[in-house]
Amino acid sequence: MSRPLLTVERLEARHGLLQAVRDVSLEIDDGETLALVGANGAGKTTLLRTIAGAHQPSGGRVVFDGEDVTWAPAYRRARMGIALVPEGRKLFPDLTVEENLRVATAARRPGRWDVDEVLEVFPLLQPLRRRHAASISGGEQQATAIGRALMANPRILLLDEVSLGLAPVVVEGLYRSLAGLSEAGVTIVLVEQDLSRAMAVASRVVCMLEGRLVLEGAAGELTREQVTEAYFGLAAGGAR
Amino acid sequence: MSWIDAVVHGVLLGGQYALLATGLSLMFGVMRIINLAHGSIALVGAYMTFLVVEHVGISPYVALVVVIPGALVVGYILQRTVLERSLRAGDLVPLLTTFGLLIVIANLLQYFFSPDVRGLSSGGIGTANLQITSTLTVAWFDVLVLGIAVALLGGLDLLLHHTQLGRELRATAADPDTAELVGVNARAVYAQATAIAVGTAALAGVFYAMRSNFDPTSGPTELIYAFEAVVIGGIGSLWGTLVGGIVLGVAQTVGAQINVQYFALAGHVVFLSVLIFRAVRAAGGVRVLRRAMS
Image 1 (cartoon, one colour):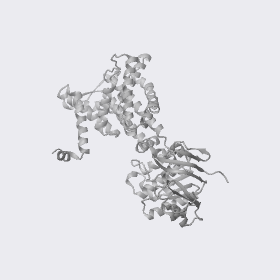
Image 2 (cartoon, chains in turn yellow, purple):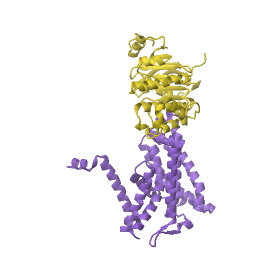
Image 3 (cartoon, helix red, strand yellow):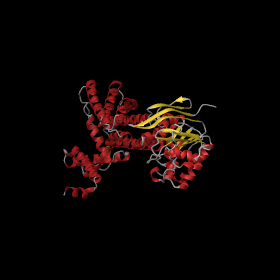
Image 4 (cartoon, rainbow over the protein chains, first blue to last red):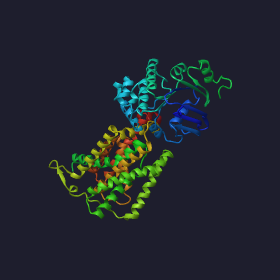
Protein backbone atom coordinates (compact mmCIF):
# COMPACT_ATOMS: atom_id res chain seq x y z
CA MET A 1 0.00 0.00 0.00
CA SER A 2 1.43 3.38 -1.00
CA ARG A 3 1.48 6.24 1.48
CA PRO A 4 -1.71 8.24 1.91
CA LEU A 5 -2.15 11.50 -0.03
CA LEU A 6 -3.14 13.40 3.07
CA THR A 7 -2.39 12.59 6.68
CA VAL A 8 -3.84 14.50 9.60
CA GLU A 9 -2.12 13.69 12.87
CA ARG A 10 -3.58 14.49 16.29
CA LEU A 11 -4.82 17.82 14.96
CA GLU A 12 -6.12 20.44 17.39
CA ALA A 13 -7.74 23.71 16.38
CA ARG A 14 -9.55 26.36 18.34
CA HIS A 15 -11.62 29.47 17.88
CA GLY A 16 -10.52 31.58 20.80
CA LEU A 17 -11.51 29.61 23.88
CA LEU A 18 -13.61 27.13 21.95
CA GLN A 19 -11.82 23.95 20.98
CA ALA A 20 -13.28 23.16 17.56
CA VAL A 21 -11.10 20.19 16.57
CA ARG A 22 -9.78 17.76 19.18
CA ASP A 23 -7.11 15.18 18.55
CA VAL A 24 -8.23 14.30 15.03
CA SER A 25 -6.16 11.77 13.11
CA LEU A 26 -7.13 10.81 9.60
CA GLU A 27 -5.59 9.36 6.47
CA ILE A 28 -6.95 9.96 3.01
CA ASP A 29 -5.76 7.88 0.06
CA ASP A 30 -5.23 9.09 -3.44
CA GLY A 31 -8.43 8.82 -5.46
CA GLU A 32 -10.89 8.11 -2.67
CA THR A 33 -14.03 10.07 -1.83
CA LEU A 34 -14.42 10.66 1.87
CA ALA A 35 -17.62 11.97 3.41
CA LEU A 36 -17.22 13.99 6.58
CA VAL A 37 -20.50 14.14 8.49
CA GLY A 38 -21.60 15.52 11.82
CA ALA A 39 -23.99 17.96 13.43
CA ASN A 40 -23.61 21.72 13.20
CA GLY A 41 -20.65 22.85 15.27
CA ALA A 42 -18.98 19.42 15.24
CA GLY A 43 -15.80 20.94 13.78
CA LYS A 44 -16.10 19.81 10.16
CA THR A 45 -15.60 23.25 8.64
CA THR A 46 -12.69 24.06 10.95
CA LEU A 47 -11.05 20.73 10.07
CA LEU A 48 -11.31 21.46 6.33
CA ARG A 49 -10.09 25.03 6.78
CA THR A 50 -7.13 23.85 8.84
CA ILE A 51 -6.19 21.33 6.15
CA ALA A 52 -6.41 24.06 3.50
CA GLY A 53 -4.39 26.54 5.57
CA ALA A 54 -7.17 29.06 6.16
CA HIS A 55 -7.11 28.31 9.89
CA GLN A 56 -4.05 27.83 12.09
CA PRO A 57 -3.97 24.64 14.17
CA SER A 58 -3.09 24.76 17.86
CA GLY A 59 -1.46 21.34 17.74
CA GLY A 60 -0.78 18.30 15.58
CA ARG A 61 0.38 17.96 11.99
CA VAL A 62 -0.95 18.03 8.44
CA VAL A 63 1.13 16.08 5.94
CA PHE A 64 0.33 16.31 2.24
CA ASP A 65 2.03 14.03 -0.24
CA GLY A 66 4.84 13.34 2.22
CA GLU A 67 5.47 17.01 3.03
CA ASP A 68 4.65 18.59 6.37
CA VAL A 69 2.41 21.55 5.48
CA THR A 70 1.13 22.30 9.01
CA TRP A 71 2.50 25.84 8.92
CA ALA A 72 2.56 26.43 5.16
CA PRO A 73 0.50 29.43 4.03
CA ALA A 74 -2.76 28.69 2.24
CA TYR A 75 -1.52 29.84 -1.17
CA ARG A 76 1.41 27.40 -1.00
CA ARG A 77 -0.99 24.54 -0.25
CA ALA A 78 -3.16 25.60 -3.18
CA ARG A 79 -0.06 25.47 -5.36
CA MET A 80 0.66 21.95 -4.06
CA GLY A 81 -2.82 20.80 -5.03
CA ILE A 82 -5.11 21.33 -2.03
CA ALA A 83 -8.28 23.16 -3.04
CA LEU A 84 -11.11 24.18 -0.71
CA VAL A 85 -14.60 25.13 -1.84
CA PRO A 86 -15.45 27.19 1.24
CA GLU A 87 -18.73 27.25 3.06
CA GLY A 88 -20.81 30.12 1.68
CA ARG A 89 -18.94 29.93 -1.66
CA LYS A 90 -16.90 33.09 -1.05
CA LEU A 91 -16.78 34.19 -4.68
CA PHE A 92 -15.20 37.54 -5.52
CA PRO A 93 -18.41 39.54 -6.04
CA ASP A 94 -17.01 42.27 -8.33
CA LEU A 95 -15.27 39.82 -10.63
CA THR A 96 -17.13 38.15 -13.46
CA VAL A 97 -17.76 34.43 -13.45
CA GLU A 98 -14.92 33.92 -15.90
CA GLU A 99 -12.58 36.15 -13.86
CA ASN A 100 -13.44 34.18 -10.74
CA LEU A 101 -12.34 31.06 -12.58
CA ARG A 102 -9.21 32.62 -14.05
CA VAL A 103 -8.02 34.04 -10.75
CA ALA A 104 -7.29 30.49 -9.63
CA THR A 105 -4.59 30.10 -12.27
CA ALA A 106 -2.59 31.85 -9.53
CA ALA A 107 -2.09 28.32 -8.18
CA ARG A 108 0.15 27.75 -11.23
CA ARG A 109 -0.99 24.20 -11.74
CA PRO A 110 -1.66 23.70 -15.41
CA GLY A 111 -3.50 20.52 -16.27
CA ARG A 112 -6.77 19.17 -17.49
CA TRP A 113 -8.86 21.97 -16.02
CA ASP A 114 -9.16 25.31 -17.76
CA VAL A 115 -12.07 27.68 -18.38
CA ASP A 116 -13.39 25.65 -21.33
CA GLU A 117 -13.26 22.39 -19.41
CA VAL A 118 -15.08 23.91 -16.41
CA LEU A 119 -17.77 25.34 -18.68
CA GLU A 120 -18.19 21.91 -20.24
CA VAL A 121 -18.81 20.32 -16.85
CA PHE A 122 -21.03 23.20 -15.72
CA PRO A 123 -22.81 24.26 -18.92
CA LEU A 124 -25.13 26.49 -16.88
CA LEU A 125 -22.18 28.90 -16.50
CA GLN A 126 -21.62 29.27 -20.24
CA PRO A 127 -24.06 32.18 -20.75
CA LEU A 128 -22.95 33.83 -17.49
CA ARG A 129 -19.25 34.19 -18.24
CA ARG A 130 -19.36 37.99 -18.24
CA ARG A 131 -21.85 38.39 -15.42
CA HIS A 132 -20.64 39.57 -12.04
CA ALA A 133 -20.54 36.78 -9.49
CA ALA A 134 -22.77 38.75 -7.13
CA SER A 135 -25.58 38.82 -9.70
CA ILE A 136 -26.07 35.09 -10.31
CA SER A 137 -28.16 32.55 -8.42
CA GLY A 138 -26.98 30.39 -5.53
CA GLY A 139 -26.63 27.26 -7.63
CA GLU A 140 -24.72 29.13 -10.30
CA GLN A 141 -22.46 30.61 -7.64
CA GLN A 142 -21.82 27.17 -6.21
CA ALA A 143 -20.91 25.82 -9.64
CA THR A 144 -18.56 28.78 -10.10
CA ALA A 145 -16.96 28.13 -6.70
CA ILE A 146 -16.36 24.47 -7.56
CA GLY A 147 -15.10 25.47 -11.00
CA ARG A 148 -12.73 27.97 -9.41
CA ALA A 149 -11.32 25.23 -7.17
CA LEU A 150 -10.92 22.92 -10.18
CA MET A 151 -9.02 25.58 -12.15
CA ALA A 152 -6.11 24.92 -9.78
CA ASN A 153 -6.08 21.30 -10.99
CA PRO A 154 -6.17 20.06 -7.40
CA ARG A 155 -5.08 16.64 -6.25
CA ILE A 156 -7.51 16.89 -3.36
CA LEU A 157 -10.77 18.81 -3.41
CA LEU A 158 -12.31 19.80 -0.08
CA LEU A 159 -16.02 20.60 -0.41
CA ASP A 160 -17.77 22.33 2.47
CA GLU A 161 -21.55 21.96 2.33
CA VAL A 162 -21.82 22.55 -1.38
CA SER A 163 -25.52 21.70 -1.45
CA LEU A 164 -26.54 24.11 1.31
CA GLY A 165 -29.47 26.29 0.28
CA LEU A 166 -29.71 24.94 -3.26
CA ALA A 167 -32.75 23.56 -5.04
CA PRO A 168 -32.80 19.71 -5.14
CA VAL A 169 -32.54 19.64 -8.92
CA VAL A 170 -29.38 21.79 -8.77
CA VAL A 171 -27.89 19.57 -6.06
CA GLU A 172 -28.63 16.56 -8.29
CA GLY A 173 -26.61 18.13 -11.09
CA LEU A 174 -23.73 19.09 -8.79
CA TYR A 175 -23.43 15.56 -7.49
CA ARG A 176 -23.42 14.12 -11.00
CA SER A 177 -20.49 16.44 -11.75
CA LEU A 178 -18.72 15.35 -8.57
CA ALA A 179 -19.08 11.68 -9.52
CA GLY A 180 -17.41 12.57 -12.82
CA LEU A 181 -14.53 14.28 -10.98
CA SER A 182 -14.02 11.28 -8.78
CA GLU A 183 -13.84 9.02 -11.84
CA ALA A 184 -11.22 11.39 -13.24
CA GLY A 185 -9.05 10.56 -10.22
CA VAL A 186 -9.57 13.63 -8.04
CA THR A 187 -9.52 12.87 -4.32
CA ILE A 188 -12.57 14.39 -2.67
CA VAL A 189 -13.44 15.22 0.93
CA LEU A 190 -17.06 16.11 1.25
CA VAL A 191 -18.86 17.78 4.13
CA GLU A 192 -22.55 17.08 3.70
CA GLN A 193 -25.60 17.39 5.97
CA ASP A 194 -27.62 14.93 3.92
CA LEU A 195 -26.51 11.54 5.27
CA SER A 196 -27.95 9.32 2.57
CA ARG A 197 -26.47 11.45 -0.18
CA ALA A 198 -23.08 11.48 1.52
CA MET A 199 -23.11 7.72 2.00
CA ALA A 200 -24.17 7.18 -1.59
CA VAL A 201 -21.24 8.99 -3.21
CA ALA A 202 -18.48 8.34 -0.70
CA SER A 203 -16.24 5.32 -0.47
CA ARG A 204 -15.58 6.03 3.20
CA VAL A 205 -17.46 7.94 5.87
CA VAL A 206 -16.11 9.63 8.99
CA CYS A 207 -18.32 11.24 11.59
CA MET A 208 -17.36 14.11 13.90
CA LEU A 209 -18.93 14.96 17.22
CA GLU A 210 -17.86 17.91 19.38
CA GLY A 211 -14.51 18.17 17.60
CA ARG A 212 -13.62 14.47 17.71
CA LEU A 213 -13.76 11.69 15.16
CA VAL A 214 -16.30 9.26 16.58
CA LEU A 215 -16.89 6.88 13.70
CA GLU A 216 -14.99 5.80 10.64
CA GLY A 217 -15.73 3.11 8.12
CA ALA A 218 -16.28 2.09 4.52
CA ALA A 219 -19.52 3.56 3.22
CA GLY A 220 -20.85 0.16 2.28
CA GLU A 221 -20.19 -1.39 5.67
CA LEU A 222 -21.73 1.24 7.92
CA THR A 223 -25.43 1.17 8.53
CA ARG A 224 -27.47 4.31 8.56
CA GLU A 225 -28.26 3.66 12.22
CA GLN A 226 -24.61 3.51 13.19
CA VAL A 227 -23.93 6.82 11.50
CA THR A 228 -27.02 8.47 12.94
CA GLU A 229 -26.06 7.39 16.44
CA ALA A 230 -22.52 8.73 16.06
CA TYR A 231 -23.95 11.90 14.52
CA PHE A 232 -26.03 12.68 17.57
CA GLY A 233 -23.58 11.22 20.09
CA LEU A 234 -25.77 8.28 21.04
CA ALA A 235 -23.15 5.58 20.47
CA ALA A 236 -22.21 4.58 24.04
CA GLY A 237 -18.51 5.28 24.21
CA GLY A 238 -18.43 4.75 20.47
CA ALA A 239 -15.20 4.55 18.55
CA ARG A 240 -13.48 7.26 20.55
CA MET B 1 -8.52 85.69 -17.94
CA SER B 2 -12.12 84.86 -18.70
CA TRP B 3 -14.31 82.27 -17.03
CA ILE B 4 -13.82 79.85 -19.90
CA ASP B 5 -10.06 80.22 -19.54
CA ALA B 6 -10.37 79.50 -15.84
CA VAL B 7 -12.31 76.29 -16.48
CA VAL B 8 -9.90 75.10 -19.20
CA HIS B 9 -6.89 75.74 -16.99
CA GLY B 10 -8.67 74.07 -14.09
CA VAL B 11 -9.26 70.92 -16.15
CA LEU B 12 -5.59 70.83 -17.11
CA LEU B 13 -4.49 71.42 -13.52
CA GLY B 14 -6.81 68.55 -12.60
CA GLY B 15 -4.50 66.28 -14.58
CA GLN B 16 -1.72 67.06 -12.11
CA TYR B 17 -3.96 66.32 -9.14
CA ALA B 18 -5.25 63.10 -10.69
CA LEU B 19 -1.66 62.02 -11.30
CA LEU B 20 -0.84 62.71 -7.65
CA ALA B 21 -3.97 60.93 -6.46
CA THR B 22 -3.64 57.72 -8.52
CA GLY B 23 -1.27 55.91 -6.18
CA LEU B 24 -3.21 57.00 -3.11
CA SER B 25 -6.42 55.70 -4.67
CA LEU B 26 -4.80 52.40 -5.67
CA MET B 27 -3.38 51.71 -2.21
CA PHE B 28 -6.66 52.50 -0.53
CA GLY B 29 -8.65 50.47 -3.05
CA VAL B 30 -6.51 47.36 -2.75
CA MET B 31 -5.26 47.38 0.84
CA ARG B 32 -7.47 49.91 2.64
CA ILE B 33 -4.29 51.77 3.57
CA ILE B 34 -4.62 55.55 3.75
CA ASN B 35 -1.02 56.41 2.96
CA LEU B 36 -0.33 59.70 4.73
CA ALA B 37 3.24 59.55 3.39
CA HIS B 38 2.01 59.58 -0.21
CA GLY B 39 2.86 63.24 -0.80
CA SER B 40 6.23 62.79 0.89
CA ILE B 41 6.99 59.82 -1.36
CA ALA B 42 6.12 61.99 -4.38
CA LEU B 43 8.51 64.59 -2.98
CA VAL B 44 11.28 61.98 -2.64
CA GLY B 45 10.74 61.20 -6.33
CA ALA B 46 11.32 64.89 -7.07
CA TYR B 47 14.48 64.99 -4.94
CA MET B 48 15.87 61.84 -6.54
CA THR B 49 15.27 63.33 -9.97
CA PHE B 50 16.91 66.55 -8.79
CA LEU B 51 19.92 64.50 -7.65
CA VAL B 52 20.26 62.70 -10.99
CA VAL B 53 19.84 65.95 -12.93
CA GLU B 54 22.48 67.72 -10.82
CA HIS B 55 25.07 64.94 -10.93
CA VAL B 56 24.60 63.41 -14.36
CA GLY B 57 23.49 66.55 -16.09
CA ILE B 58 20.59 65.05 -18.03
CA SER B 59 17.06 66.35 -18.47
CA PRO B 60 14.54 65.45 -15.74
CA TYR B 61 12.47 63.58 -18.33
CA VAL B 62 15.41 61.26 -19.04
CA ALA B 63 16.12 60.95 -15.32
CA LEU B 64 12.66 59.35 -14.95
CA VAL B 65 14.07 56.25 -16.67
CA VAL B 66 16.15 55.66 -13.54
CA VAL B 67 13.90 57.20 -10.89
CA ILE B 68 10.68 55.31 -11.71
CA PRO B 69 12.20 51.79 -11.62
CA GLY B 70 13.93 52.81 -8.39
CA ALA B 71 10.58 53.92 -6.95
CA LEU B 72 8.98 50.59 -7.91
CA VAL B 73 11.68 48.69 -6.02
CA VAL B 74 11.41 51.01 -3.00
CA GLY B 75 7.62 50.54 -2.98
CA TYR B 76 7.95 46.75 -3.02
CA ILE B 77 10.46 46.80 -0.16
CA LEU B 78 8.42 49.35 1.82
CA GLN B 79 5.41 47.02 1.72
CA ARG B 80 7.32 43.85 2.61
CA THR B 81 9.26 45.42 5.47
CA VAL B 82 7.08 48.10 7.06
CA LEU B 83 3.47 48.24 5.81
CA GLU B 84 2.88 44.47 5.80
CA ARG B 85 3.67 44.29 9.50
CA SER B 86 1.51 47.29 10.36
CA LEU B 87 -1.42 45.86 8.35
CA ARG B 88 -1.39 42.77 10.55
CA ALA B 89 -1.68 44.96 13.66
CA GLY B 90 -5.11 46.40 12.82
CA ASP B 91 -6.78 49.13 10.81
CA LEU B 92 -5.36 52.17 12.57
CA VAL B 93 -1.74 51.09 12.69
CA PRO B 94 -1.00 51.68 8.97
CA LEU B 95 -2.31 55.23 9.41
CA LEU B 96 0.14 55.82 12.25
CA THR B 97 2.95 54.09 10.40
CA THR B 98 2.56 56.21 7.28
CA PHE B 99 2.27 59.35 9.43
CA GLY B 100 5.59 58.38 11.01
CA LEU B 101 7.02 57.80 7.56
CA LEU B 102 5.93 61.31 6.55
CA ILE B 103 7.92 62.82 9.41
CA VAL B 104 10.95 60.61 8.85
CA ILE B 105 11.04 61.51 5.16
CA ALA B 106 10.77 65.26 5.86
CA ASN B 107 13.66 65.06 8.33
CA LEU B 108 15.85 62.92 6.09
CA LEU B 109 15.30 65.30 3.18
CA GLN B 110 16.16 68.23 5.43
CA TYR B 111 19.32 66.43 6.57
CA PHE B 112 20.58 65.48 3.12
CA PHE B 113 19.33 68.36 1.00
CA SER B 114 19.13 71.27 3.51
CA PRO B 115 15.91 73.27 3.90
CA ASP B 116 16.65 75.23 0.71
CA VAL B 117 13.91 75.63 -1.86
CA ARG B 118 14.64 73.71 -5.07
CA GLY B 119 13.21 73.56 -8.53
CA LEU B 120 13.19 71.22 -11.49
CA SER B 121 13.35 72.57 -15.02
CA SER B 122 10.51 71.47 -17.24
CA GLY B 123 12.64 72.02 -20.34
CA GLY B 124 11.53 73.57 -23.60
CA ILE B 125 7.98 72.27 -23.30
CA GLY B 126 7.68 74.10 -19.97
CA THR B 127 7.56 77.45 -21.69
CA ALA B 128 5.82 76.46 -24.93
CA ASN B 129 2.21 77.53 -25.30
CA LEU B 130 -0.63 76.40 -27.45
CA GLN B 131 -2.81 79.19 -28.80
CA ILE B 132 -6.38 77.86 -28.96
CA THR B 133 -8.36 81.04 -29.62
CA SER B 134 -7.23 84.64 -29.78
CA THR B 135 -7.75 84.95 -26.03
CA LEU B 136 -7.20 81.38 -24.80
CA THR B 137 -3.69 80.02 -24.45
CA VAL B 138 -2.74 76.82 -22.67
CA ALA B 139 0.70 75.53 -21.69
CA TRP B 140 1.90 72.44 -23.52
CA PHE B 141 3.29 71.23 -20.21
CA ASP B 142 -0.22 71.17 -18.68
CA VAL B 143 -1.52 69.25 -21.69
CA LEU B 144 1.35 66.80 -21.33
CA VAL B 145 0.61 66.19 -17.62
CA LEU B 146 -3.11 65.67 -18.24
CA GLY B 147 -2.21 63.29 -21.07
CA ILE B 148 0.11 61.32 -18.79
CA ALA B 149 -2.57 61.15 -16.09
CA VAL B 150 -5.14 59.81 -18.57
CA ALA B 151 -2.65 57.34 -20.03
CA LEU B 152 -1.62 56.15 -16.56
CA LEU B 153 -5.20 55.66 -15.41
CA GLY B 154 -6.05 53.93 -18.69
CA GLY B 155 -3.02 51.67 -18.28
CA LEU B 156 -3.99 50.81 -14.73
CA ASP B 157 -7.55 50.12 -15.85
CA LEU B 158 -6.24 47.70 -18.48
CA LEU B 159 -3.95 46.08 -15.94
CA LEU B 160 -6.74 45.62 -13.41
CA HIS B 161 -9.27 44.20 -15.86
CA HIS B 162 -7.25 42.32 -18.44
CA THR B 163 -4.28 40.71 -16.74
CA GLN B 164 -3.80 37.96 -14.20
CA LEU B 165 -2.09 40.40 -11.81
CA GLY B 166 -5.14 42.65 -12.12
CA ARG B 167 -7.53 39.81 -11.32
CA GLU B 168 -5.36 38.84 -8.35
CA LEU B 169 -5.30 42.48 -7.16
CA ARG B 170 -9.09 42.80 -7.35
CA ALA B 171 -9.67 39.39 -5.76
CA THR B 172 -7.26 40.18 -2.94
CA ALA B 173 -8.86 43.60 -2.43
CA ALA B 174 -12.26 41.93 -2.05
CA ASP B 175 -11.25 39.00 0.16
CA PRO B 176 -7.56 38.31 0.89
CA ASP B 177 -8.22 35.06 2.78
CA THR B 178 -10.17 33.47 -0.06
CA ALA B 179 -7.65 34.77 -2.59
CA GLU B 180 -4.96 32.84 -0.71
CA LEU B 181 -7.11 29.71 -0.87
CA VAL B 182 -7.12 29.82 -4.66
CA GLY B 183 -3.34 30.19 -4.80
CA VAL B 184 -2.83 33.96 -4.67
CA ASN B 185 0.13 35.08 -2.58
CA ALA B 186 -1.68 38.06 -1.07
CA ARG B 187 1.43 39.60 0.43
CA ALA B 188 3.26 39.56 -2.88
CA VAL B 189 0.19 41.06 -4.56
CA TYR B 190 0.05 43.83 -1.95
CA ALA B 191 3.74 44.53 -2.47
CA GLN B 192 3.22 44.83 -6.23
CA ALA B 193 0.31 47.22 -5.64
CA THR B 194 2.46 49.38 -3.37
CA ALA B 195 5.29 49.28 -5.92
CA ILE B 196 2.94 50.63 -8.58
CA ALA B 197 1.54 53.24 -6.16
CA VAL B 198 5.00 54.47 -5.18
CA GLY B 199 6.08 54.51 -8.84
CA THR B 200 3.12 56.69 -9.83
CA ALA B 201 3.70 58.91 -6.78
CA ALA B 202 7.29 59.51 -7.84
CA LEU B 203 6.16 60.31 -11.39
CA ALA B 204 3.56 62.75 -10.07
CA GLY B 205 6.08 64.29 -7.69
CA VAL B 206 8.51 65.02 -10.52
CA PHE B 207 5.85 66.80 -12.58
CA TYR B 208 4.63 68.67 -9.51
CA ALA B 209 8.21 69.80 -8.89
CA MET B 210 8.49 71.12 -12.45
CA ARG B 211 5.37 73.17 -11.82
CA SER B 212 6.25 74.67 -8.46
CA ASN B 213 9.31 74.89 -6.22
CA PHE B 214 9.70 72.41 -3.42
CA ASP B 215 11.47 72.02 -0.08
CA PRO B 216 11.62 69.13 2.45
CA THR B 217 8.24 70.08 3.95
CA SER B 218 6.26 70.10 0.68
CA GLY B 219 4.99 66.53 1.12
CA PRO B 220 1.81 67.29 3.11
CA THR B 221 0.71 69.93 0.58
CA GLU B 222 0.88 67.38 -2.21
CA LEU B 223 -0.89 64.85 0.03
CA ILE B 224 -3.79 67.25 0.68
CA TYR B 225 -4.43 67.78 -3.03
CA ALA B 226 -4.18 64.06 -3.77
CA PHE B 227 -6.43 63.23 -0.84
CA GLU B 228 -9.05 65.79 -1.86
CA ALA B 229 -9.06 64.47 -5.45
CA VAL B 230 -9.58 60.89 -4.21
CA VAL B 231 -12.42 61.86 -1.87
CA ILE B 232 -14.20 64.09 -4.39
CA GLY B 233 -13.95 61.40 -7.07
CA GLY B 234 -15.21 58.60 -4.84
CA ILE B 235 -12.89 56.41 -2.81
CA GLY B 236 -11.47 53.39 -4.59
CA SER B 237 -12.53 54.38 -8.11
CA LEU B 238 -9.71 55.01 -10.58
CA TRP B 239 -11.62 57.06 -13.15
CA GLY B 240 -13.38 58.81 -10.29
CA THR B 241 -9.92 59.96 -9.25
CA LEU B 242 -9.51 61.71 -12.60
CA VAL B 243 -12.90 63.37 -12.20
CA GLY B 244 -12.00 64.33 -8.63
CA GLY B 245 -8.72 65.87 -9.73
CA ILE B 246 -10.46 67.87 -12.44
CA VAL B 247 -13.23 69.09 -10.11
CA LEU B 248 -10.58 70.19 -7.63
CA GLY B 249 -8.54 71.95 -10.33
CA VAL B 250 -11.57 73.74 -11.76
CA ALA B 251 -12.71 74.80 -8.27
CA GLN B 252 -9.31 76.33 -7.64
CA THR B 253 -8.97 78.22 -10.91
CA VAL B 254 -12.57 79.43 -10.84
CA GLY B 255 -12.05 80.47 -7.21
CA ALA B 256 -8.95 82.39 -8.26
CA GLN B 257 -10.96 84.06 -11.03
CA ILE B 258 -13.28 85.47 -8.36
CA ASN B 259 -10.38 86.57 -6.18
CA VAL B 260 -6.77 85.42 -6.51
CA GLN B 261 -6.67 84.62 -2.81
CA TYR B 262 -9.50 82.09 -3.17
CA PHE B 263 -7.40 79.63 -5.22
CA ALA B 264 -6.67 77.07 -2.46
CA LEU B 265 -9.75 77.97 -0.42
CA ALA B 266 -12.21 77.19 -3.22
CA GLY B 267 -10.71 73.71 -3.60
CA HIS B 268 -11.02 72.99 0.11
CA VAL B 269 -14.62 74.29 0.14
CA VAL B 270 -15.62 71.94 -2.70
CA PHE B 271 -13.89 69.06 -0.92
CA LEU B 272 -15.71 69.80 2.35
CA SER B 273 -19.03 70.20 0.55
CA VAL B 274 -18.63 66.78 -1.06
CA LEU B 275 -17.77 65.25 2.32
CA ILE B 276 -20.79 66.86 4.00
CA PHE B 277 -23.07 65.86 1.11
CA ARG B 278 -21.91 62.23 1.39
CA ALA B 279 -22.26 62.23 5.18
CA VAL B 280 -25.79 63.61 4.97
CA ARG B 281 -26.78 61.11 2.30
CA ALA B 282 -25.29 58.25 4.33
CA ALA B 283 -27.28 59.44 7.35
CA GLY B 284 -30.50 59.16 5.34
CA GLY B 285 -30.81 62.53 3.63
CA VAL B 286 -31.64 66.05 4.68
CA ARG B 287 -35.19 65.30 5.74
CA VAL B 288 -34.06 62.74 8.30
CA LEU B 289 -31.49 65.15 9.70
CA ARG B 290 -34.04 67.95 9.95
CA ARG B 291 -36.42 65.66 11.81
CA ALA B 292 -33.64 64.58 14.15
CA MET B 293 -32.78 68.19 14.96
CA SER B 294 -36.32 69.42 15.51
